[in-house]
Length: 213
Image 1 (cartoon, one colour):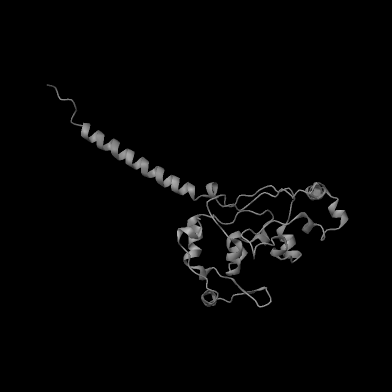
Image 2 (spheres, one colour):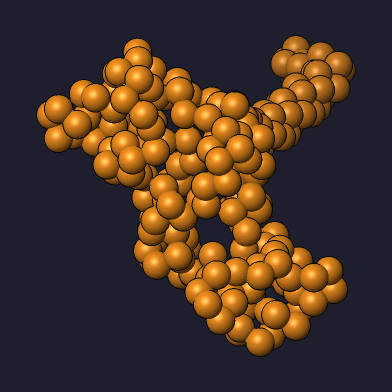
């Protein structure tokens, strides 16, 4: 009976198995890398907003506190977006009548909020509470980046679970503020973050149910 396989059959089979294993490894690494890339996480992505709002102008030039527009950041899960009525008192009539304020005038006329586009977005299965983080001393720019320098706001952080856990494992490294007696905030001096974390019971929360409820 003639031999079914040539002497080189085993070598070829081993080469095919090795090639498949290498391809599977490369595909796994590529998928892992893509899932953490800005293309997948949305990091650095900008959005065209209905009103060309300038954070550098309002924060740096006008010295408007973040909480004036994002009023829920200290007491609610969501920071919130400003109602149209918040935009009106600061602007003169000649500005309000310009084309830049078309969306503002339309919102006032029909009573509907300005359709701002969300920049930072978490998956539906992730629970995040702004108030808890702000009251624990986490500064806004820890997650949102230097918004006061952004002509057009973009997502500064990857917002992945790995990124969140870096802070949850060592929160004392990210504390920048402590509450003052008058309801405001004081900057934490370098080297005092660990003391502030202990005083205000800032805990290391890494259990799954912290964010997935």
